[in-house]
Image (cartoon, rainbow, N blue to C red; front, side, top):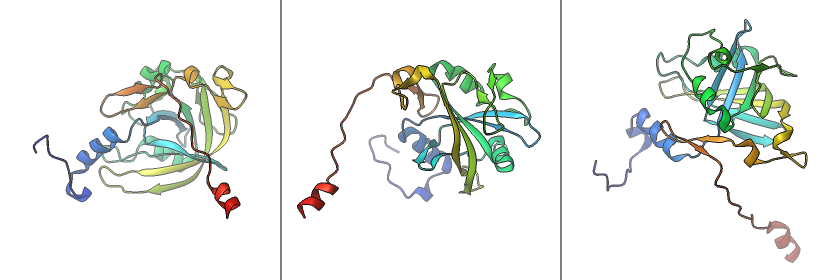
Length: 219
């Protein structure tokens, strides 16, 4: 196709690998959920997911989306562990942990401890059994609420929804007890391909005030 032409096509007419590249190259930047789990027999697992985000604050809820493993078309160990145990921990990735996080993205045989593989220290959780990444500055211990399977086909995946039951926030990133200082947290974001981004070039935009109450008062 001529590079000056727009790509306009029904989604079903593109191979899923092309759709995947367009999605990860345009839905940017994506936060990274570094998910730690335990297998049913107690073996630790740790893997990063950039299809990850917050859902709501009451109840406090997060989601991440493990896809079907491309090499053998099986579900990932993280999804299996969460399905079997109902627990996981979200560890937030700061820039200082970027290299270790990438190491844990390696496809390893089931039962290999990614904490040890990447040289990471574990910290015990309070309410769930999976360990935390000790050097992460923010952790969310979660209990499973629901798994929604979108597709088990190549390119498919699932939505894992978890409710936060305990959180750990390092005092070095806290402002006024309940705000996070992004300049201290230094989170990184996932881009397309092998690219990541820093969150150092920050700017503020004030949200417009609500018009709902004003319109009710004037009516």
